[in-house]
Amino acid sequence: MLKNFFSIGFLTLILSCQSNPEVVFTPSESEQFRPDYHFTPPAGWMNDPNGLVYLDGEYHLFYQHYPDSTVWGPMHWGHAVSKDLVSWEHLPIAIAPDSLGYIFSGSAVYDAENTSGLGTAENPPLVAIYTYHDAGGEKSGKSDFQTQGIASSIDKGRTWVKYDGNPVLPNQGIRDFRDPKVSQITQADGSKTWVMTLAAQDRIQFFKSGDLKNWTMLSEFGQGIGAHGGVWECPDLLPFKTPSGEEKFVLLVSINPGGPQKGSATQYFIGNFDNGTFTPDDTMIRWIDYGPDNYAGVTWSNLPKEQDRTLFIGWMSNWLYSQVVPTKTWRSALTVPRELSLFEVNGTLLLKSAPAPELEKMRADEIEIKDRTSNLPSQAFEILADLGGSDSFSVLFSNEDGEKLLIMKDQGLVSIDRTLAGKSDFQEDFATVHSAPMSWEAKEIRIFLDASSVELFVNDGELVMTSILFPNRPWKIVEVSESISDPKIYPLKIK
Image 1 (cartoon, helix red, strand yellow):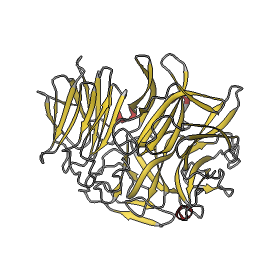
Image 2 (tube, helix red, strand yellow):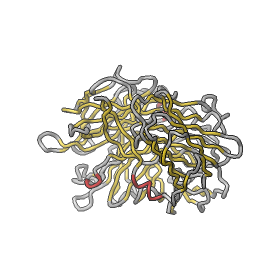
Image 3 (cartoon, one colour):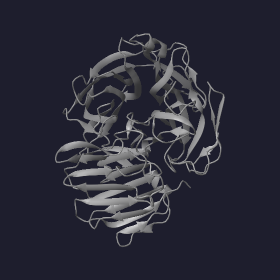
Image 4 (tube, helix red, strand yellow):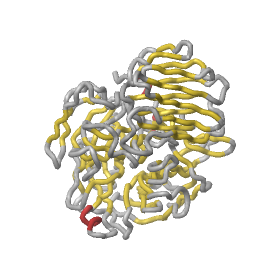
């Protein structure tokens, strides 16, 4: 187990794998596109974040992983832990495929009262809830090839034991029946129950359990509501308070295809969850991120009460091109961690995604931008700027090869233009301009750049756009419009 600080010159990383005992990867100093500070697998394929849970000072991050190739294959749960959401330690693969199938997406909880009986009162377990995908059953034409299973750990997630009664939730005859997100909800009488939020093709199903083993269906939501350009996936049900103190629930639902920029995206609904039923306040279609490359994001469970926040991370890619992007030994990164909250615009509640404050620990000394132009010190940096009362802006990045990345707002549209931002011939729709409507005032912007990504936060996350890109050389110059006041550049480095 080695510390991975995600710099392009990190040492040999060893990935332990139950199905392949040891895969050794030694990247060169010049490994192109490897991020400096975004999470990536040591080698092989990665997609959805899974099983996000906090325990005893550690943030656990599991993820969909195929260690034997850089394209999707038999899914495992990769595993890493962090004490600060910035520096991650890679651990051995947590859960590997077995006779019931591949290990698809899911969640993890800390069973503090040992309701499952899989630990003890003195040593309660972590319990992972995941989807089994029977590839053979799918190939033979069956419709019930996805079921839900559980595994437990009593050593802080280092080793996992699958429950011998799996699957705990059989299939009802629905082809796409997956991605269980489990949380513990306190009911009106003070009692607690486990609630599973599950994607079922074109809707969400809710189940309850007292022991994480036996599940009873509560209700369904979503048929004919929201965006339905593709299959619904990776849901998450989250309690919030509005700015006025009212209690609300937010339901995240990822969809592929059918996003606002083609391909994958995550929509959300704001409403109430009473007696096991989710009722939305309205049926408007809203997206957690209006860029093309934030998908399947979910939140951490069991955060300490003193943190008082909802912490989210997403897969920074899109199924349109995720398997053909020009990385060689690894595929995909995750977004920076983000804090979710509700805010109000003209009487309408919306979901805000702000960069987690832990990211500020990476900042080096500020670099001044003079005469609207500055050289850039590295491939990893952050820019903050006020808009000085103007509701339009532009920020242009360029390099020696004539490649350009343009970020702007004009006439109520926020846009990221990656048409000239580097390699793009791997997919016909990659080199394009992505835009999002923003009817309210943009007061400030925050931009995170890394080797192969840009994340734009307007008004501390009131509007967010995430985009991957592949410049042949790092960005060297930034130019900002006159509407931008007091711009700051911070080189970012994991210390």
